[in-house]
Amino acid sequence: MKFFKDVSTKSLESVGAFGQLNQKAWSSLAEKQMEIISLATEASVESLNVFSKTQDVKDLTEQQTKITKDFGEKLKVKNQELVDISTKVRDDFNEFTQKQVSLVNENLSNVAQ
Image (cartoon, rainbow, N blue to C red; front, side):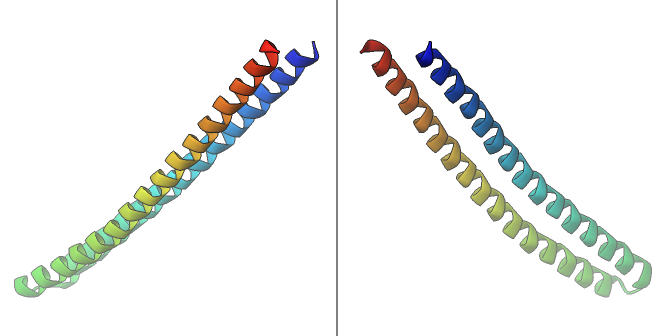
């Protein structure tokens, strides 16, 4: 009975740890998504301001090009941050899985003895 109690306790702890990993991953990804939406909103507002204030087509084109270029550079940075987060999440899940497999093997060894 003690063995089954220990296995059940470890299983519940594993489920909790898995839930925390998931929550952390989704929280990080959602935060970056909100940052990207904020950048897009800022670029849109800038663009609308330029359209409403600029009469000269050449000047309008130059300013729109600058806004687009700035947004693209910021977006590139955010995309790299998303790649970094995804890599870390992958590594965290791999580590978690390896620990779980080790625990299962350990429990099976204990049962065999």
